[in-house]
Image (cartoon, rainbow, N blue to C red; front, top):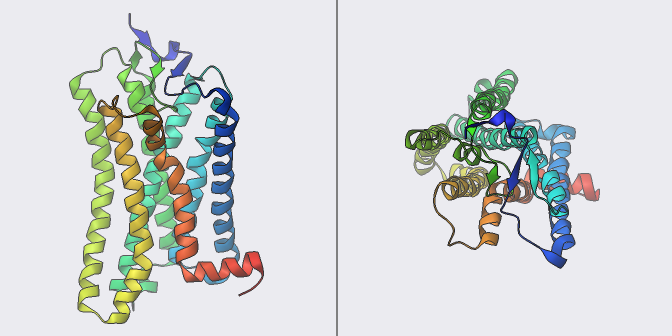
Length: 309
């Protein structure tokens, strides 16, 4: 029987397991992580906005990164908190599509932010004398606007396509909604459609990653031909960015491939944790990485929070 997706009132999330007496423990862990994510990211956003010495391109892009992590976490954690205390793990169709939209835009905005940050580092290291002429305030605003507008519009088109699929089921084998899980429920899904989604997504994401790789190839050329001071500057500013990119890419690509391959041999707890990795670890990883590693931010935080230089 062909069932239109508009007739599906809710979806069942089957990756949840019976936690018995540990229900409130899991709830407390999720709540603690969410509060920690909010606290760390809001602190850094406020510090960057308040302190005028941090009103530089790199820190403006970092501020955009932290805002996106608040956005992505809010699209997931309140839902997980409700589900942790619920005996019936279902989600209404409109809320499911909204969650897909939040997750997809979060991922694309994160990669776009990292690409813009790599471009900024490329200009700062390869063209230090012309940097402030090339990276003007108006250009910073345009890059940040593009970082957000492109994913928000592009993902909206994808959600419309998914919403009009004809579905023959409502079972999602995850703890949250994602587009490919909905696509697998389609009555008319074909091998071509199966691979079109992954090719399209990998084209967008890999395109952004290749742009980042290109900028770092240019940076490395300058570093190897430059002085020791240039190399030290490149290492201090680029290491956090590369670590953030590798961490986020690992989480995203694992989720992409585990959704499309048979991972039934992997323990369910491990599958759930790894599928949530890019949504939970990145919003914690980046604030700690940049807040602790970048001396300028660390100094301002000490002054802002502790009241001492």
